[in-house]
Image 1 (cartoon, one colour):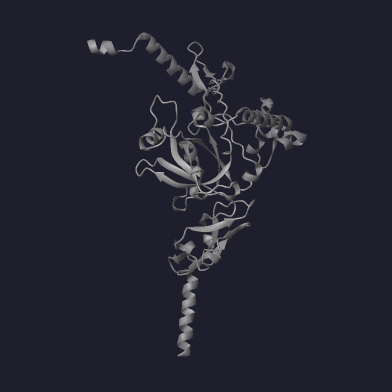
Image 2: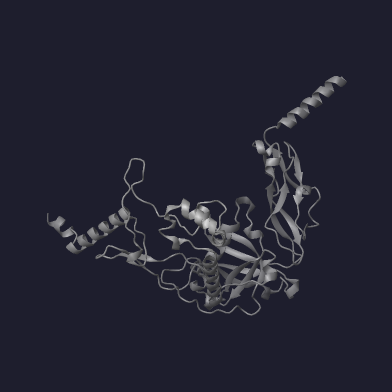
Length: 418
C-alpha cells in the first residue's frame, strides 16, 4: 500500500490528464480542427443512423470547382455567371458560405505571392548552390565538399572520427575522399602530386544522390557528372545544408479553460553563416568513383572523384524499353545481360544522358542482342574501342506462338522436299 501511494499520480497531473481527454473527446465529436484561434473551431451535431458515419469528416474545399465537375476551373467560374448560378443551384452550401469560393484573380494573386516568397527565400539563403544555365542544360547536378586539413584529417583514426563524430563534436558526419585525374582544359596532369586534393563530403549529400540514382545493378550514381564546389574546412556547418522548404514544425496545445486547440508557430530556422568557395574549386566537373560501403550497416566509407572534361569516355548504364513489344519478354522471358554499361563519348554542350535505351521490339527466344540495338541520343557516340559485335545479352524464356508456327512451317517444308 505504501508503494502504491508513492507511485500514484499527483492531483495536478490527474486534472491535466482529465482536461486533455475531455478536449480530445470533444474535438472528435464536434470535428474541431487545429487552428490559431478559437473562432476557427466549428461545432457540428452528430449524424445518427445505421448507414451513416458517426463522426463528420473535414468539409470539402470549395476553392476547387473541379472536385464537383471534371475539367471546371476557378477562372471559368469567375467569367461565367450562368456557371456560378448552376453551382449555387446544385450544391447546397454555396449560399451559406459563398466566400469560400476563390475565383480567378484572387487565386492567381496568391500563387504569385507564394512564388515571390519562395524566390525571396532563395535569394536570402547564401548557401544555395545555383549552377550556370550551360551546366543545368547538360543534366549536371551540384555537389558540395570541404577541404581536409593535412596532417589532422588524414589516416585511419582521423578519418573514422570524420565518419562517426561524437555527440559533443560540432561537426556532422563527413566521408573522406580525394579529387584526382587529368583535365587538359585546366592544364592539370594526373602525374603531378598537386593534382590530388583531399576532400570530405557530407554523408547526406551522397545519400541524397544514391537515393535518387541508385538502381541496383544498373546504378547510375557513379556514372553521372556532377559540378563539385569545394569550401574551406572551417566552413563546414550543418545549417548550410538544411532544406529550403522545411516541414511544418508547428506545435499544438490545449487551453484548459476553453478546451480549444491552439497552434504555436515554430521559431524561424537559424540563418546559415556565409561561406566562400576555395579559389579555383567552384563547379569542378567530376565523376564519383571508388564508392565504398559498409558490408553490414551499408554506410558510406569513402568516395573519390575523377575530373571530367568533354571528350573523356564515360560508362553509361543500359535501360530496356518496349519490352511489351517482344513476343518472348511479354510472356515471362528475360534478357540475360552480359554488359550492363556502354562506354560513350559526349560532345561538348550536349546533355549527358542518364542511360542508353536498348530497343526490345521483336526480340525472340535465343536472340543475341548486340550494340546495334542501342538508341543513342544526339551528341552521344560509342567509344571507338568498343567493338562492333559488342554483346549486350541473350534472350531466354518461354517460346512464343510465332516461334512455334515458324518451326512447324519449317518442318513441314522439309518433309515435302524429302
